[in-house]
Image (cartoon, rainbow, N blue to C red; front, top):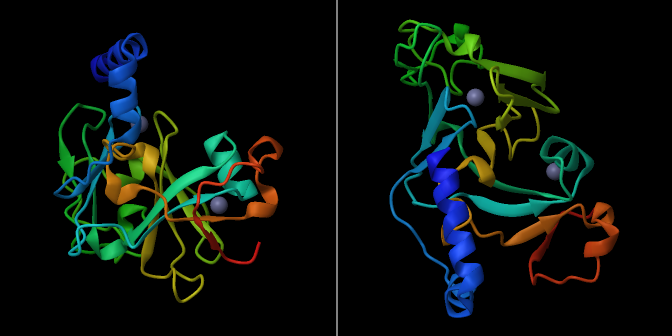
Length: 209
Ligand SMILES: [Zn+2]
Ligand SMILES: [Zn+2]
């Protein structure tokens, strides 16, 4: 919560200082290193370390599922290779740190072990990570404690999605300050909120909807 408070203080400072606000609005920082994500309560954390240093895609999606899971007008998502993802249970019921080290194990509760499987060292991932959906339409994974949606897999979906994971940018640390995650495309424009239809962000159109 301290970091939230610090960010709110930053925002308040920018609001009082027009030059600081203008600088913040124009800054696009491309960060280095792996992407780190976490749920609200911190029980689940994950790291994505793509060889190319950037997501395969970052986009806005106005589809109904994205509106429902985000509770907002659209979702800002990024796509990565599943092979670049490691998920950790930061603290189990006894507070012990547990890591799923991603070497493949079918009984982690994360679906096929090739996705985010790992040796079980204490609290299994399945005790902390809830799953909704199926392998064809997509499996969404949430923190069982706080309900934050972290990951989406489609291991039996379209060939282009089978080895990919979709991550909501809002769960990535610094996601909205990192230029690598700035959206380049937007999809499902027919579901775009009525009050957004006149706003052109200059993004490429994704898909035909
Ligand atoms: Zn949580
Ligand atoms: Zn969507």
